Structures are given as structure tokens and as C-alpha cells.
Length: 141
Image: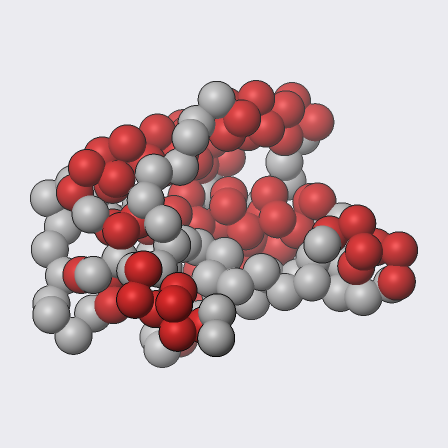
């Protein structure tokens, strides 16, 4: 799909570029979700999947510490570095989060940082489907 976007000159806006909050580093294996929070039924947010996927958050945290940034800013900065036509728009209801997310544009990732992220991410197998099977069935009608 990305190759087609590039060929046709079409921009791409990643859906939920912070993984529904997971890549912010604020969610861990002990986090609980209310019954009304979709993450409470999302396979990707099941405790075992969260534990396995923490490797990605740990990577972002390491780089964020070096860059004096936040894990979410590193995730967004990485997306911004991919191509000029990939434009992440993270959703939030809080102005303070919006301001922090905007800070990603000021984070400078070196070629070494980008290689580190790519190499580490290529060794991480993300666990859990993004959406519950019931939702996927509804969207495939």
C-alpha cells in the first residue's frame, strides 16, 4: 500500500500512530482498563501481549532518554522521518498531550538512531491482533 501511495503521490495518515497509547510508555503489564475502554477487549492489550510488546516500548524509552524526549515523541519522530508523505496525526482530548506530541517535530533522529530503531523493531514480533475478531468480522462485510 505504501508503494502505491508513493507512486501516486498520495499522502498516508497512520491510524493510531501511538498504538492507542501503548507507545507512550504509560501502559504496562499491570495497567487495567475499564469495561468501556475498547482496549479491555483488544487482543493487543491482553496482559500476555502487552508483556511481549513491551520490548518496543523499552526501545523507545531508551532512545527517548538519550534524546531528552518522551517515548511518544520518538515514535512520532520516527514516522516523520520515513517519508514526507507519511503524516501521523495522533488523537488526544488533552491540550498538554497535543503540545507534547507536537514536540516530536523537534526531535532529531540521527541515521544511527533510525538504524537502531529499525534493527530492534525488526526483531520484535508484535503480539495480539489490533482489534477483536468480532470487530474484524464486521469490517470485512
